[in-house]
Image (cartoon, rainbow, N blue to C red):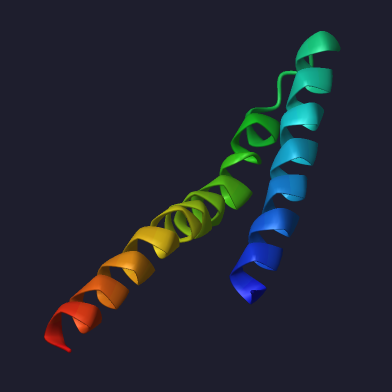
Length: 70
């Protein structure tokens, strides 16, 4: 449950970083750190997203193997 909450907050941070990058591009501000700012929440967002994606399949596999053993 807490990983889902972390994933949600990271997605908000990523959205804000991308929005800041778009604003900087529109204003023609040459700041590389603004573009790289989106990568900070993106890496853990990817990790938590992959975990949340795989969670139902791993649970289904372990439940099926325990039923087969019974």
